[in-house]
Each structure stands twice: as C-alpha cells, then as structure tokens.
Image 1 (cartoon, chains in turn brown, orange):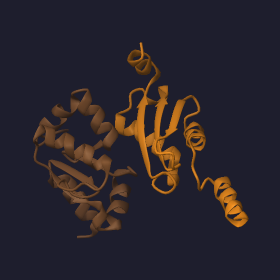
Image 2 (cartoon, helix red, strand yellow):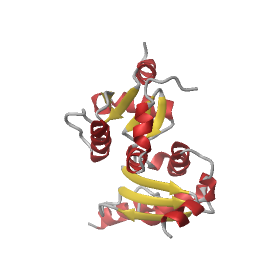
Image 3 (cartoon, rainbow over the protein chains, first blue to last red):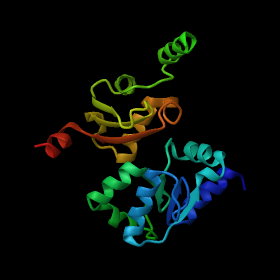
Length: 107
Length: 99
C-alpha cells in the first residue's frame, strides 16, 4: 500500500480519525491539543496519526483532503474540519451529534 | 546591516514576509465582496487570526467556506503563514451574532 492509500484507509476504516501534530498524550501544537481536549471531553474512542512522524504524511493527506493545515478531524470518512471548525461545533453543541453519528451508515 | 535591510525589503516586496494587510488583500482578491478583518496574533507576522464575512458562503458547509479562504491564500498558507485561526460566515449570520 502506498502512503496515500494508507492514509485513505485510515480515514475510511476508523469511525473517528484525527491527524495531528504529536500524540493525544503529548500534543505538539495548541490547535491539535484543542481538538484532543474536545474529543476527550466527550469520551469517544478515536485513532490518531502524528503527522510529524513523516513530512510526507501531511503532503499526501492535504492532497487528498484539500485542506492545508493540521489538525484534521474525520468522522465516518468525512472531513469535519480543523481546530477552528471543531471548536465552533463544540461550542454550538453540534459536535456531540456528529461524534454520536460515528459508526452509523451515512449516505 | 544595510545588506540585511535590503534583503528584508526584497522579501517583503515578494510577499515572503506577511502582514495582516497582505493576508487581507489575498482574501479580497478571491472574494471581492468580503468584509475581512485580520490580526497578527503573535506579532511575528506568521500567525494570524481572520474573520471573513461574505454571502459567497451561503449554502456552503463550514469546510467548504474555509477551503475558499485557504485557496485564496494558496501556497502562502503553511509557508509564510504558519497558522491561521479562521472564522467564516455569511452577512446575515454575522448580523445575527452581533445584534
């Protein structure tokens, strides 16, 4: 599998997938940390990839998602957004519904 | 010393150093009707916070709205612009939130 295929596979096979700088235990960037804190707040399970592990991850991911910055949160294979959108959805109460929908079939 | 200053001016001319006005110009080039406010959040000319208000965002998801702004910033985002906090919204929603 190419790196790009691995990334797409991660996005599609994990109901909640976070691409971030650092790890959930040790985020390396305030924006990534904000999303981790939001996900931890709801107590949901998620998988994550540390984009700092290999510079190519970020390049291939951004090509696929058409999103230039990190973090990137995917639910059911769909890009939810970066830190700003995730925090906005958290503040207006919509993030819970989105995370609840993880695992449900979406059209 | 003078050499460094000349280099600074050359880089500034070619947008290699950003400032809030240039970020605003880039966004307005892509979305001419937008109301744009940009601030330098760290004073280091590479971390910015922007609010973009435009009716171009009507009917678009938040992801699509941000993608329009990211497209406007092109290769500058992640190169000269290391981080951009972004809020996008249509005019009527902005009016609602600020009434």
